[in-house]
Image (tube, rainbow, N blue to C red; front, side):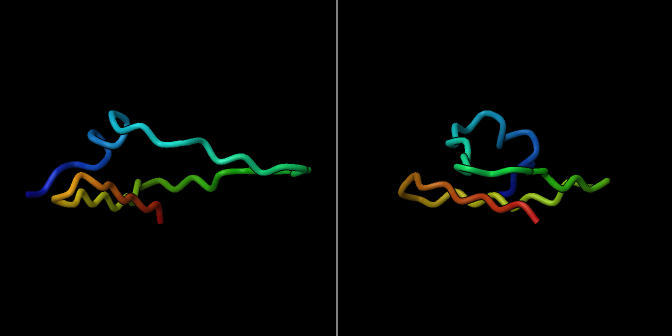
Amino acid sequence: MSVDGGKVLPQIWSPHACFVNSKDASIHRSPFSNIFLQIYSNGSVWHNYR
């Protein structure tokens, strides 16, 4: 089964990353979203941003 990760991913809960004692942080943005989303038969979810 193939799904659009950009539409499905916002519906899946994921914890927020927290970097303790960080002086500066930024998230790299790209003109094209490149998201890999894999849902296993046991219900596990793995997603990766590139």
